[in-house]
Amino acid sequence: MPSDEGTEKSVSWHRKLEESEAKTKRGHSVNKYEVVIIGGGPAGLTAGLYAARAGLRSLLLEKGIPGGQIVNARQVENYPGFSEGISGEELGQFMHRQAAKYGLETVPIEATRVSTGHLYEVSTPQGNIQTESIIIATGSEYRKLGVNGEERLSGRGVSYCATCDGFFFRDRQVAVVGGGDTAITDALELSQHANKVYVIHRRDQLRATKALQERASSQPKIDLVWDTVVAEIVGDNMLTNLNLRNVKTGQSSNLEVDGLFVAVGLKPNSHIFSHLVTVDEAGFIMTDELMRTSTPGIFAAGDIRHNSFRQVITAAGDGAAAASSAFKYLYE
Image (cartoon, rainbow, N blue to C red; front, side, top):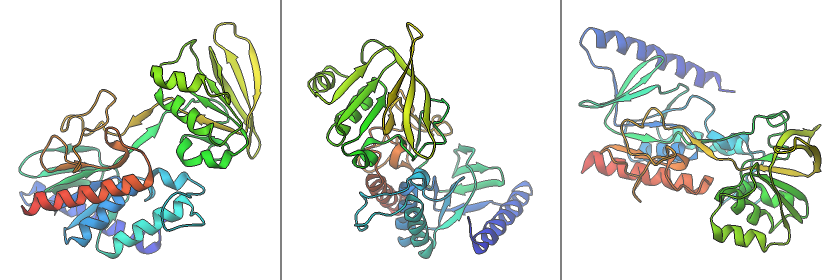
């Protein structure tokens, strides 16, 4: 929940935007920043920290809770400095508090459009903002199965990140849904922890590369379940079993597992930027090693990038690099 102080600042900022909109109609300028960061996950918050500490007039727009997807993680155990682990929500709060300490302005609002001109202009439901540079840190969303029990048991046996959560299923039985490179890579990762890994795929052959398929077939802990989909995820407080359905025969079956890892793809939140920067075939933004996109003055960081490792620590590194590149762009 936002603090009263944060709410007052948000209301004040909205009033300022409304006043700026009125001035714009009379021929005056709107709010101007040196950098606007869109997205408040680890990449965006770290970019905001570095930009603010560099002395840039910086604004972060985040439609949800600062922290991004990590706020859904009950325990983060692989972020340096927290040997006993830390909840994702608390880690996000720490990052936000540190960035705000150095002057980062944050507004809980969604960016709806970005247009070009003498300056970039970011549209929001409360008005427009002008900026000399933009850091895109809007991340991506895991594609979901859309079956009963998925939302309710998310974080209670249902996961979308084997690298993040595989350790919690040591010596347990787990399942992976999917047939591409990510699904098989996840299954191989999980086989280092679990005693049995079922790969559930709706087709009778995998889409993963041949090398990954060969590695999976040679791993005795991995069993492939062909022509099958998950019809329902079952459990009270924790996942206990899956109701499965064979897509060819229609036959139903039950599979007892302690964990389910969904690996059916990612959806990048890049739709409002695709007319400005180069994206790959899936919609992820192409950058160089300095987080520069194809458009001068626009940078991207974190899960929104092509070939991102999709971990908190690498997202934070991307954010630091993007802010550094924005600083150089503005002052060199």
